[in-house]
Image 1 (cartoon, one colour):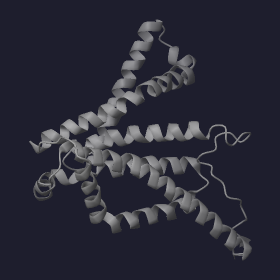
Image 2 (spheres, rainbow, N blue to C red):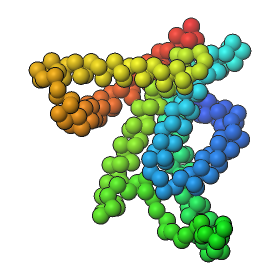
Image 3 (cartoon, rainbow, N blue to C red):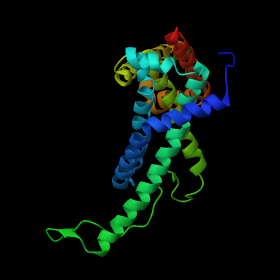
Image 4 (cartoon, helix red, strand yellow):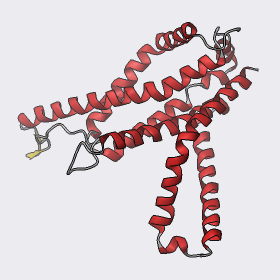
Length: 254
């Protein structure tokens, strides 16, 4: 194909995706909204669901390229690898994050509405009231009770950045592993993290000259230092994994 990137072909790829998976997407986001109805006020569960469901979605995005029949059909689509990878990045990262936030908002609204309706009906089991009136809360975005709007942008951006990092890693796994992409990517990332942690501890001890540096103040030596390193490197790791995924997709076709 002469043109490396064409917006018309890109639009047709998006159209193909939604045409083939419209009902599946509709059911999926409906289920997600229902789940958020029950966990709407638990920030750890909400954040965990967003990350876990997101990386599982990304890990399975390119699964068809590993199938002999579906893979041939996929690579016969008249579009370049760059266009296909662009669709993969947009769908697994920006589209998915936007949709899951919408599902959270819908689940939060409906869950609060139904809860207050049942509370008004004095619904009880064995004489015990289960539902109580509660106001609409957006705990996912509130990190400071004294000033609820102070850190909304910061916390939202941090969640989005961490989400993009996970998506980029598991999108690479979907292009690399032939089967069980999610589990194999999870295993590979855990092994890499353990190796990096061991290397970090060794370097920390060598540079400080202390063998008990972690025992003395583990929250600072490990948590804060690793956190700072991750914040600075995440912005570079995300495009790096996307680029590697693109070349892996190119090699797969060859």
